[in-house]
Figure 1 (cartoon, each protein chain N blue to C red):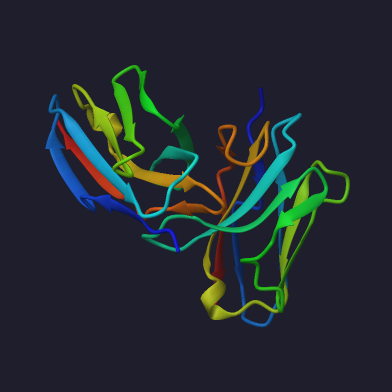
Figure 2: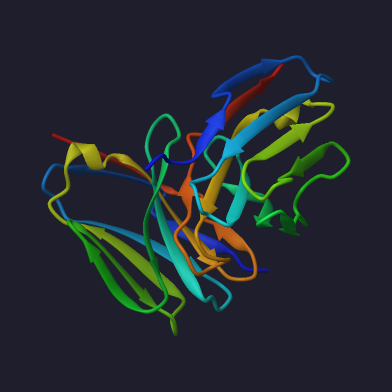
Length: 106
Length: 115
């Protein structure tokens, strides 16, 4: 059974700080999905990646297939980045982590 | 371009009552997903459709849950009868391509409260 674990579960930061959220999975996957869920429930897809690194604005996602690990980085964090960040492995089953709740304070 | 549309946004019912949720995916998206999300947890897949075919319903509690996507476009998820433990947010998502190959776009969800 594949398990997806995220760390930390909760994260607070001051505006401008560099943020890293980690995701580990136990079974080899074909791709990993990073999602953002704002208060109120709306889910937005950030990245889907199967190797290397992807960048979109201040967000950077990396994945190491051999180590079964992915990271989501936020540079120059802002209060509007406050949300729950969820990673999901896209294998035989789409399995979601429980999310990392990020709060960025001004 | 309109996103994934779900209705209703909120539903409160008493236990043992039936309830139905509706989802209209993004136009042209062949794959449709229904998820359940409990408070503080990540979404859990209930059923996945490729066009009108349910290709993965292994996690759908079939004794009380049912879903359909008759014309391969919009979809309905039904619970009958609802139980207290069914209180959750029910999310619908769609993607252009198939499983694992394309970004999923999520609807706003339906928050169900069973009293």
